[in-house]
Image (cartoon, rainbow, N blue to C red; front, side):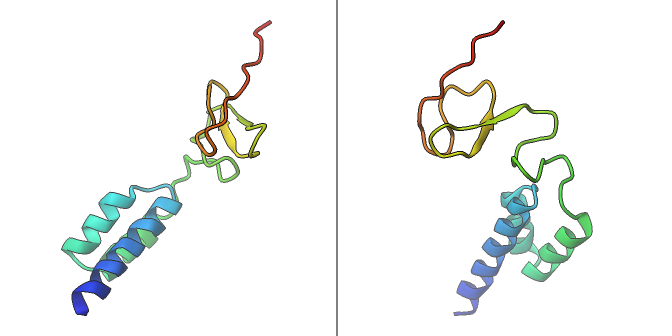
Length: 94
């Protein structure tokens, strides 16, 4: 039972890191090797990744537009939506 709870806490730290723009796998691994408490404290001290646009979820400087089907943000160069898989019409270049 202890190992199950320990593993779930490690995975939770990984998901938390992923939502903050950090590597979820590395933080889950850090939590597994040291402890979930240490992983969470390191994540708190590192803070959110400021290179991620909080609105689009894409890195800063990447042009984005909304998918016409699901209204999620995708890259301008995308041919298919990464969220719903719908084909995205390309805007003609002037």
